[in-house]
Length: 300
Image 1 (cartoon, helix red, strand yellow):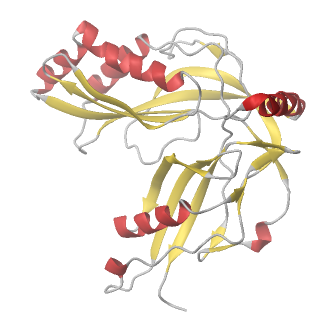
Image 2 (image 1 turned 45 degrees about the horizontal axis):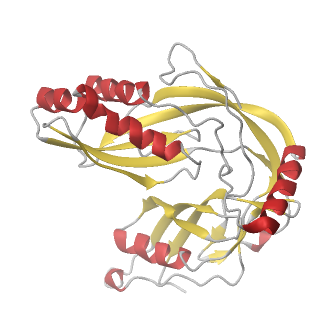
């Protein structure tokens, strides 16, 4: 995988390789298996695809962030960002798990092959202080790419070294500005009503694999008590990484859409007990992003 610099890119030039090994490797047997899977995955490569990593910066309190301030902050953050070398990207792009009325859609069964590329997606929360400090730099949704999240947090923390934080807070007349940064090589994020900034472009390998699928015996979510008085239907869309063991990695969970917080919580509780047939190439499982819809109804 090669990162390219163009006129709009903010990150420095780097040459990296995509690692398609499983995320967790423990013990000699697992190491041997992972090494074997590495050759299988490389052999499953069908072509390459160009991707663009984009950054979205918004205020966490819902207030608008002036475009000039947003651009200035993104440029300041990514002037300090250095991608890990090599860049390991073990998570593959989304394969939707199709559900109908809280039950698995049996028509989607089967080991149909599809081409997927690795994906980088991370969410980071922090706050700018008038004192020139940067507070609370934390990884809200990890990319699971070794070293990548740490590099982003380091670049955010570096804002205080050149008084960027104080300059922005003073210009806006605020003591504290709570912010959220999203970095993604996937599809455009429809939840962000701000234009993204391109931070680098890259060439990712695409691999032929079988998408992750939920197991047939997964429990149904409970209709939330606080919604029973209204008796309305509910819809929730969750996104999560399913690891190579078939478990949902809860720290990567995001609510993409929900009729209400109560429905979202009920869906998340059910998902925490889900098991999946993990995405795989032959006998080699790999982590994959899945987007899972839930429907709630009191009607029979």
